[in-house]
Length: 179
Image 1: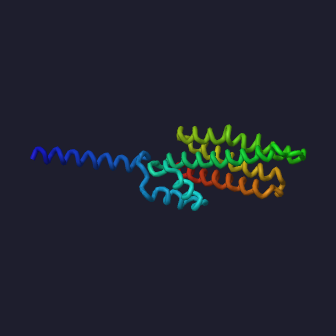
Image 2 (image 1 turned 45 degrees about the vertical axis):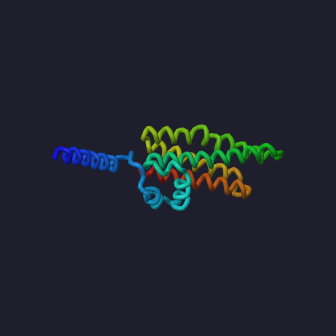
Image 3 (image 1 turned 60 degrees about the vertical axis):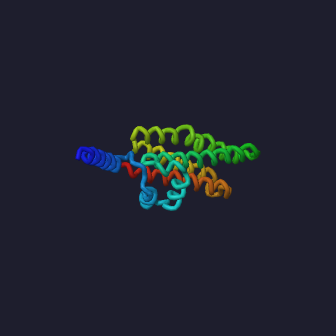
């Protein structure tokens, strides 16, 4: 009987730990966490593919998935900034020089140097409203770059601006689940 009581106590402890983990934001995601999270997102397909692509998502909780989404936004923003810099190097027209320069310095540069690091810091500090505002700044920056060209942005740049806009907006939707 004594061994039975020990086994029962271990079982009860195991059940209590499982209950505590399931009620906290520390529990690893079930197979449907990404699907549930992305179902409420305006960019459902992008959300599922972005989060599922990252191997960290298999063991991430909701906070971790939001962090993965910011990381993916940072990657896409960095790629667009690198593209802008590569085009900028070959520009001889003064008007284009100013347009691309503004996109590099004020829009994408600010996103990489200020907005996205602040979003990560605010997410970690559980300042979700501030993290949402940071992501809104990234969305706005992509639109501002597009607007530099008054609707006549070269197609490769328009596609990149849209990709950054969409992933940043998707990330903002994910962070909104915390508030």
